Image (cartoon, rainbow, N blue to C red; front, side, top):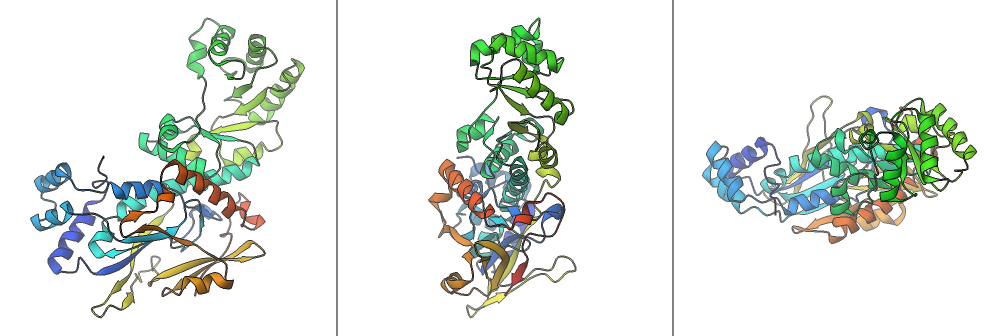
Length: 434
């Protein structure tokens, strides 16, 4: 097991040290992860990374290597080192299902534990959910723009090696059909795809020889990259090498709206009427939408996807919202600073629906009974994610990702129609505190 314990900020541990000295480290607390607002005028966000976070929490252990580093650097006291050595999260976590939609103020993740036990997970939770949700939110917009045409994630070379796997996973959750990243395939069961780059074509004396070599290896159903030199000549060479049964051609340059129409007409004239056209070339949701009327069969997206299409982090925060007093009563707590005020108290969120369409995000404060909320107010959003330290098995691994993908599709179907517009605007539904 590879420890995740040092994937955190120093102040998480110095807070624990100070709380131990003050005798407040075991105070029962409620921490909440939420976004104050949606980024960039977006109309909704997509929760992603929950399965990865639960895995990371089970690996959050301070072994000899981690403890040795903390001791050498004098980061915390010997008493804190002893506490960290014994650390195992044993609290409860509830939250939105992975794949769920969120809005401003949505209590996406709620951690109930002693102060020290809960606060130490802050950085891990935020670094996971902020990135994965940013990618999934961008991916969902691209899926809507594609209007049923398949999309492949191809951004591994545009982000860090760990982020590449997370991005592929998040994109698949939001409706992408495949990834070029093999580790995402191995770890999460995401279907993988890929054939050849321009380097392979440049390896051979001419383009047709390169195409024939690829066809000999991958068969006529493969996709040939036709824009290393002249696109029109590339299409001729591709069909001459493969015949009209060629699976697809890929175009990675030029004015795609014009080029795709020319290539479609050329393929049809050459008898390759069933040959598909896939396009890449720095696509984002707006470029995909602009190609809606073009004869494109599929898209490959890289940079814009793995950078959240302009919103590389979801803007989520992790705050203490309640603590118990000496008598065992819950006290809501929160910041009051300008622009960063938080709503204290334990909460239960409900997606209010009318005729199956979402109309508001209703956040009930002070922990009302869930059964009463479910009766007529809509869909209760919180589910158990960790109970007494044990993660929910149905959220883990490739099977958990498959469930999250299905849940995301169902949640998207509840949105009002104007929520799918790509223009900047207000959230699709308002957030109400009740």
